[in-house]
Each structure stands twice: as structure tokens, then as C-alpha cells.
View (cartoon, rainbow, N blue to C red):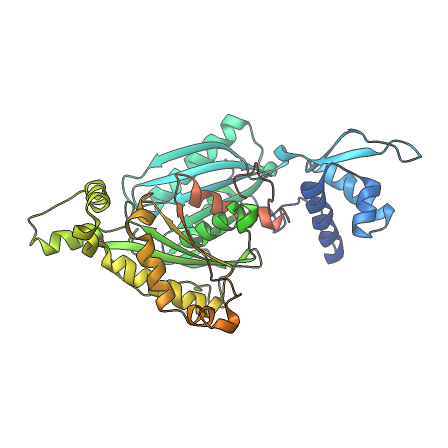
Length: 404
């Protein structure tokens, strides 16, 4: 594999020369329309966009040439010739999403609709950055070889990392889970693979997946996402906690790219049980969960830190952001049963929003819902590739897509 090809441009469209801004915008508009409302004819596109027919024809021909759109046959005539219908070519571009954990990387290959075509888990013997990058390279090569994919068809790679990320540089500023400081991950991957790379915090990846996974009745333009990792935390003593923010359908990172970062150490429930027993009682996480479900009063103390700190973080987040929805993502499916009610109560007790909602004259205002979501094997990897699809103006809104 050539180690130094140029990464794909920001839009993912392989356009010769430097196109004018309005042409790139028109390309994105047309591609997005075909994706969301297709099949459409050229005449439909003129009507929907207001772009001149000659420009639409030129744009469509370009999209066909780039394997992003295809003609699928004739539509119904409205008086003249039957129109030629256009549809998104789902296999026109592919992306790779990777979630980086302490002991493994979860990898997926998706098409332009965001549908997962292949999954792969590669174990990590250690978190040395060179070893991690080599595993990512092997996974990428395996995907491309098995599917016989060309570099032109790849929009890029998205990597979800537990830690603080400087997005523009793709630098991992700090990751306690991986024991990384100032690791330049993006440049190293782009040089090695020749593919555009996005590196983002794993909570941000979770927020993007939760946003696009939302069913129609829960869809909202803004979302606060809280990630709680207990099985895959970097230490036995602390739970991993992170926050991601989605505003207007896009991840919000802030000026310093650290929006959502919170300085809160939450003791792991297992560590609390061990400490209270003086080291005499050592339970696995599964054992503790089952005991907590069976005798909740006896083990409520083990979940005090999570209930108190997560609830307060959410309460403050609701006040600062006024999101349409809060989602708590966790690698423990039973978390809502064990401590969900306490987290919700703590959040409402520490939110001005809750005080306002209790005023009689304002009781029509809906409280911000707090939902729980399970982190599956590919959840964060799916979120990691979303920015690449958004750059194609393809925020997937199809129910069969894994990104909606």
C-alpha cells in the first residue's frame, strides 16, 4: 500500500481542480436530495432546488461519473417523454469506523447509507500507539481486500477514542484509559493509509449515534449524551465518564474542542463494595448487578457515586444547554434498572428546568426526557464515521440505516 497518497478532500468528492464554492454547495444539495427523496428525475431536482436545468444536468453527470448516483429506469410521464429516474449508489463510497478500547479495537465498514457491511474485532496486546496503528492498518487492509475496494471509493476513517481530543490536529491530548498523552494519531494514520481521518472523543461518537438512532417520536435537534463505561473502564477503581453534545444535528466541540469534557471521578461500584468490606468481598460486575437487582436496598450504596455525580452533571447540562433530550449510554444493559430512577431524580433535583416545570402557570412545558441506551459492540464505531458521511451532505435519515 502506498504510504503517501493525498487524503480525500473534505467533501469526499473527487473533483479535478478547485471547484467554486457554489458548485460544491449545489453538488451537496443535489446529492442530499437524491439520498433523502430519491428516486428523482432531473426535472424533479430543478423543481426542488431552483437550480438551472443546465447546471442540474452537469451536476448529475458528474455524480454519475463519480459513482455516487445511478440511473435506474424510466418514471411516469406527465405529458412528455418519460423521465429518467436517479437514485443514490449506496456502494459508491465506503467508510471505516473504529472504536479504540484498552484491550481491543472494534471496526466496521459502512456504505454511503451508513449500513454496516462488515464487523471486525482485533485484540490489542498493549496500547502502544504504534501497535494500535498497525492493528488499524491491518483492519483497513482486510476490509478493502475482502471487498475489493479501491482507494477512490473510501471517504475515510473515523476513530472514537476515550480521552480528550484536539480535533483539528487529530491529537489525543490525554487518555487515562490508554495511558496516552499528546499522541498525534490522525497524521500517523493518514500518512500510513492515505485516507482522510477523523479522531473524536468516544462520548461524541456515542452522541452522534444516539442522535441518528432516535426514532421519529424522539427525534430532536439537540441532545446531551452521557457515556458511562463500567466493563471497559481503564481502571478497576473508577468508572469512565464522558459527555457529548449534538446541536442542530452536528457534534458541538466548542472553540477549544473540549466541549462536554468534565472533571468528575466516579468510583467504580465494585471498588465501593470492596472498600466497604475492607477488601473481604470481591464481586464481579455481573455478580454485583444481579445482587443489586435482587436486593436493591442492600447494595444501593454501591451505586451512590454514579447516581449523585451523573445526576448532577445531567442537571447542570440541562440548565446550560436546554437540550431536547438526554441519553445515557452504558456498556451495562441493566444500568437503568439498577440506578436509573435515582439518576433521573438527582438530575431533576439539581436543575432549574425542573423548578420552572413545577410552576403552575408553566406546567405545559415538557420536562427534558432522560433515556438510557446500551453500548453495543459497534455503537461508538458507527458514530465515529458519521462526520465523513456528513461531509458528503449525507446525514442518513433512513430507518434501515444503522446511523439513524
